[in-house]
Image 1: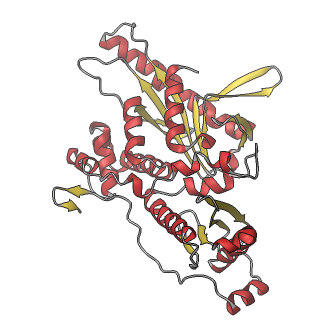
Image 2: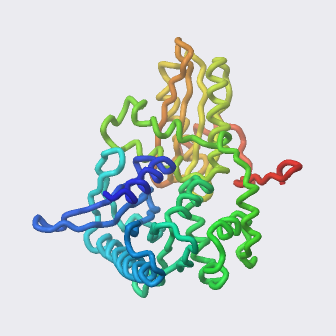
Image 3: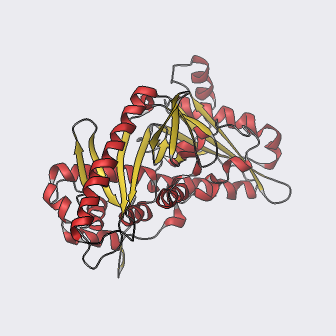
Length: 387
């Protein structure tokens, strides 16, 4: 692994979890051959981002002609061909066994993908007059490939933070290439991110869009759950050494910051109720984007011994009540030492009518009523406060 590949892998791991980050991936289609799948991959259920990376030696000829020749040869030529090879390998040889940054072996299958982003990252030595590089390459066989300097990619990740938003931005960036090609190529990346934050596809992007990025309010404490998710495997009593728990954390990792804010609000409320050993009805919400429900169950201390039964039953009940194919449940109970036990479960089966469940819910409905609401993602700030 090169220094560039390692830096990108560590960035992706920090923001998108070790379970879904794959460093330089190689595979052996036969006993006598080994091929490189990609320099790096983020793979989260039905979403993937594949990377090829190129870095220019700082001691190389710094003339404009030499730099342009390197870019055309290594980035436009070689790296985009490797992207095409990646897509071809996924079609031809999948599922492909790969090791994530947690050291777990996972099968990557192109068949499960709904969204696949293709990205070439490059790094060049700094010059007094930075060259203007194209932001896109259009391949006849695999479509649009994003071309991004490393610093711009890191800036995008640090600004948008969640994988769902990174994915949406790459889709937005592709849309800009189709709808506003000259502006997309001419404007700095920060303006394109600001245009995405504005959320108006029909509006012409402009240099002033960078303001939206600058006034984005830092509210990460209100929604960030990485502290819980990064320690998930270490704290679970089940599935030691396995990857079944991915079914749980992948659904949380798919949420954007607005949905994560709902998640964290309910998580904290359940901790408070469990701390007081106070009865409260379960909290819940459903993400229309991912079609997954979440139910949060605070339990009184005397229910500790039956907590897993309660968790399984209420998760199944919420899944059925909301007519979902997927539901994640969490239960909370206070321990004698003042800490908490948080149990998780996942139900993922196609929804079907169940006469017995209908009867149970009709006789004893355990949930609060649900209501639709618009969840805003991006709070902006001005000198006078939020706008």
